[in-house]
Image: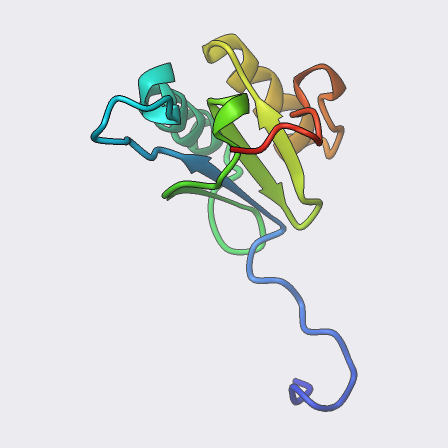
Length: 118
């Protein structure tokens, strides 16, 4: 095993990591929680487990607080690629799992436009 200063890259603990914004704003301001983000997160987690993709060296599905892309809500981001997705329904989540998380193919039609922030 190499040391952090040796210059040799360490293997990643997860091959891919998907974060779902589940933020809810108490003042009624637009947020991912108002757009079914929790159901999408739960569905993604279930699909990843069913596909045998969960665990070290594979995929981790995580909740996140505000990711500051509220204008594109609901959003999720996949690392290490840094690909942002805006999704509409559970079928979109199924496509992200099958195409990106399982096969490494970015779902272009669901990519969040780069100019959409908060």
